[in-house]
Structures are given as structure tokens and as C-alpha cells.
Length: 309
Image 1 (cartoon, rainbow, N blue to C red):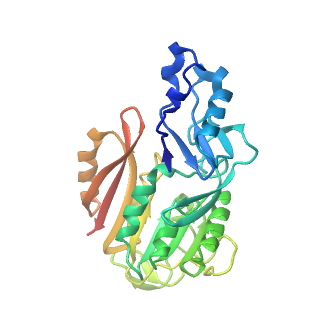
Image 2: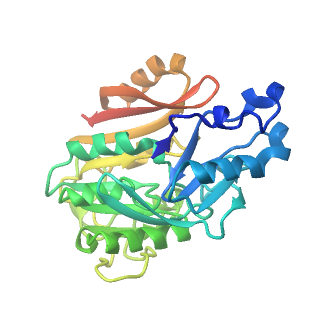
């Protein structure tokens, strides 16, 4: 989880970093498992090893310190990291009763959303059928399956896909989760988009495997194709990356009337009223929306709990 020691890193660096530069020491940093992650400003380049040493000593089980040197980039949503201390960027992270194995340099994982993931899990009931695009290594997937839901997890990053399968195995949820390695854009364009079955009420046929050729990550317990439930999915959870809001319309077609969509987006506060109106026009009622963290000056992450009308 996100970590701030009782003694701030800035205070800990007094006497090591010159006073005029001390205010540039980051106030926040993260721990993912036993890996500490910080973004050291270029102005403090000469002090990054000293900062890493201090971080290493502030938490007893720390085994590596990474300097995040770029924002999330590319279709796999990974940042570039510099290993300042330690030998491995692979770690075991525990959150809300679940265990996640991951490599911080190969996959995206945001430890600051642990409370939000717990909130969503609290709404899920057994026997629900849930679709989760942008699944990553499973921070929304495992809690959903742990509540007894059947989950279809879609992820493009092959490394994340492999770790997700491993995390499903570690947490003994193999019978409840199908992992599909696919870009969401081509997912909607896959040949055989509609086969046979009943109508979901939203233009999507249901009841049969409609994506039999999808590359499902290897492992026991996989189905042979993606299947839309007879009436549509009960719930969709969309931890949407920046700039990919347009996928909301496509996913909503798979959700049954009265079903829920938990949609994450990056916006300025002034844009929220317009979004609410836009969602209404899409046939989505806003039950709740809330601020879920700042990501840049003037831009925040927002979550919308939407009901399909």
C-alpha cells in the first residue's frame, strides 16, 4: 500500500541534501511488496543513491528501490524504472487478503487503490458473472472471484497475463476466472462477434461462445471461448487507462439491464457534470461518483458507479 513513515523522507534527508533542495524530496512513495518506488526529480540526481539508501532503511523488509523515470507508456501500460538498490524487481504483494506475484518493471500495479478495490468487492454477490477489461495482474479480478463470482478477465500485456494466471492459481480461484489475452480494440472486432443464442436486450446475442478463437492464457480451467451470459453480464469493472474512455460504450453492450459498470476515468473536476449528462444519453444512470486520487495538476481519477437502464 501507499506508505508514509512517521518521519517523512524529507525530514530523514536533512543534513544529507542541501537545504535549498530539500523541498524537492518527494513527499509520497509507494511500496509494492518489498519493492519501494519513488520518482526522484532530476534536480536531485546527485542524491538518488542516498535517497534510495534511506528508503531501504525505513521499512525492514525492503529488498529493492526503484526510481520511476517515465510515465506509463505503450499499450502494455508500463513505466520505465531505474533500479537504484537491490537485484530483483519481482515481488509478492499482499492486499485485502489476496496475494499478487508481479514484476514491477513488466506490469502495471497501483497500490494506492487498495481501498477502492475493497469497496467494489464489497458490492459483489456470489453467482454474479463479471467482465473485467484492463485486468492487469488481477487486483479487481481476485476479489471478485473470491466473492464467488465468475469472472472474464481481458488483458493485452502478455507478462501481466502470465502473472494473472499465476495469481489465480496461488489464490485457488482457477475454476472461477477465464483470462483472455487480447487488445480490447480488436476484441470488439474479432470475427464471429455474434453467433447464436438469445438476445441480451442490447444488440448482443448471448448463450454461445462468441469468441472461440481468442488467445486464452495457457493453464488448467480455461474455457474454449468467451461466452456472454443469457441476459448479459451482471457487472463490469473497468479500471480504464488514460485516453481509453471510448471503450465504455462497447463494454456496456455486454451488461444486462439493471447491471452495474464501475468505470474509472481521468478528468478535471469541471468536466464531471458534462460526463454525467453524456452517460445518461448512453442509457447509464450515475448511482455514485467519487474522486479517487490525483494524477496530475488539475486532473484526478474518478470512479463512476453506473447502472445500465
